[in-house]
Length: 633
Image (tube, rainbow, N blue to C red; front, side):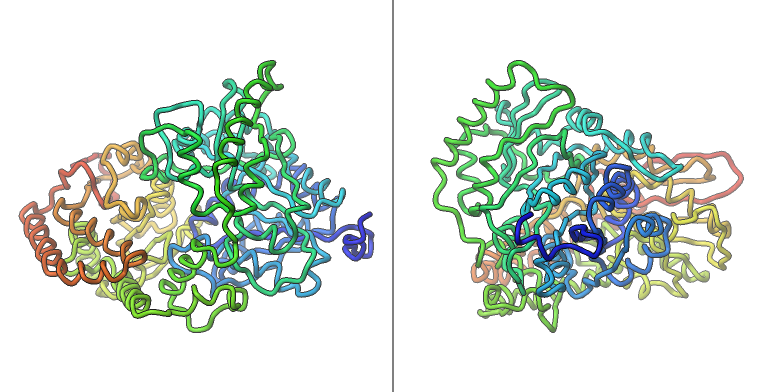
């Protein structure tokens, strides 16, 4: 037994371990409860891990999400295995700054133990990771063998292709997803995400601007990988740390432990972690080209750290059968390519003061408008990212605050604004129907909730999507006859399930206005192709309605003004003086462009947008006794 593990025992002689789960928001809790958590509850995952080590689970989440989750059967299932705790991260959550919040949350999960952190092996898990059965048992065996810094790769597949199969595998009796590594790998390899294909070195048609993982398919059953970015799966700190100073996948290994102790899980038979993303995720990063060594160097030289260089050296294998006879020849070709990349790369960046981290902190503070810096960030290493040091940074903070105040007012939009065509019909329905009495609001995001409260003429009863779907067969008495539903684009495939659950739970509701702000799915782009939305239509339409109307929104001139505004906003973060000058000159023209677009939209009346790209989807559903009719304008 290593000396560093000597104090890491409980009274029974077991080594101490904490599973840190960072999750907040209904979208990620839905992923957690529908796919990830059932896979973690498979017999050779959490149950086996709890037998090997003295395990506790810490949920790093918001206070509101903790209250909701603690009332579910999923929480009870976890408590039957080991103690479960909640750690509040309300002060870390900033809008659209996921990786900053994730890093702060994981850091808090360790730092709060003070000097005791060196006695604990911390296992990290994102809410959207699906594990094969046996993966966590393998992690437990590594902890028992004395490994103190463990990296593990994930493989990204297309959610629309893989999720239905996972749903079929779900065992409703014990609420688990018990899937062997080779079965899960087989389905993952059959449905690679477009960004995964773009990272394949053996094809020369497409590349991604973020080649942080590289792949060499050997055959239909085997893929070789080399990742710059891998997941820090387990760390047992060998020093007491009081702050974080860079993104968790840039720094945690060397900040809390040492690169000299790094162990990488390289074979999917031992551990397999599936990441599902929607088909359109990061599609704006894909373009034509070839993954040459020079291209990979060009895209990574400005950010890669020593940890990333070390990761890249490790050969990873994803396979659903025994390795083929020609495996070694493919592995040699991959190794030669990686050696070429490493030879051409410059000296690695220091993770302390990394420009990505400092820029992220600046944006996080501007978007969250915090008054007190969390202890995990309050350190000299992060000073440049937390203290506005120039007039341009202070101006950017003002712009962010104004933008946040505007977003809080949605869906109420001024006539001159480029969002007017996106929200006008939905806002009109709320004004009209709420004037007749109490209304329901069903949402899966905090966005728009405040604006609807101000827009409505009467009382608004708000429910989250998670609350609605929990015990969806129980009837709720209400005076409301109208419900407004706001559904994030990533959750459109759950539209039918949501509508039918709403109809069962609230039988008094006779009319539903469902709205999906499609522009949230593709930022910094301005809209989505109509063709990519139509594939969800059958997932949205319920089976029992008397009248239904589906309409797309978005006006060409508004989208042009939106695109210009986004470019200026992004320029503010990189070339603020130039952006301020351009904004001063262009602002009147953008307002005129917005007014012109609104005038054209007004003449269109109630018709659906005829643009090939759209920024919103709204659907009106009226329940009744007549046969279902579908009006798709």
